[in-house]
Length: 155
Image 1 (tube, rainbow, N blue to C red):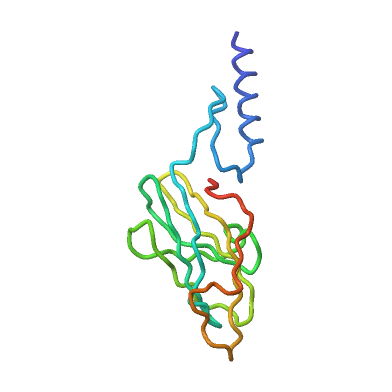
Image 2 (image 1 turned 90 degrees about the vertical axis):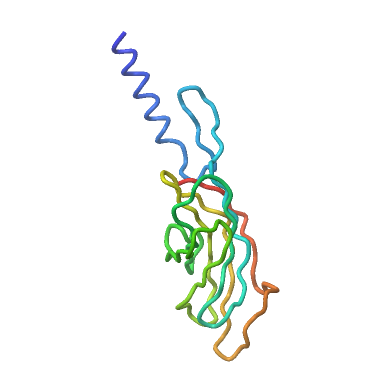
């Protein structure tokens, strides 16, 4: 009987490690029940795009959030390779200024929220900063596109 329990536990552990980190839901492997994320994050838009900075807005719904903001990078999957910009305050809807950017460069941005136990990421957007001689783009999001990435991913 003890051997069966050990084998069952090992099987559960192996199954747990085979679950992809990019899946947007948790699965209780004991009962096979899908558990929805407690937090929902949406990267809304990138605006006030300049040659060296931009502003990104986000919306968060769910449990108590201890940290919020965006990750940005010159390559996709900004949460893995990029820089974090934390939003001030304690509201779940807001925006972050992304500074220190290079002119005429494409960036990828993804909002995130951290609760006491999880980090959840929103959808990924991309934008291109202006060349140094161009005027600031307004809120029409010129050059911005929404990537077909999974949303509300716990990692």
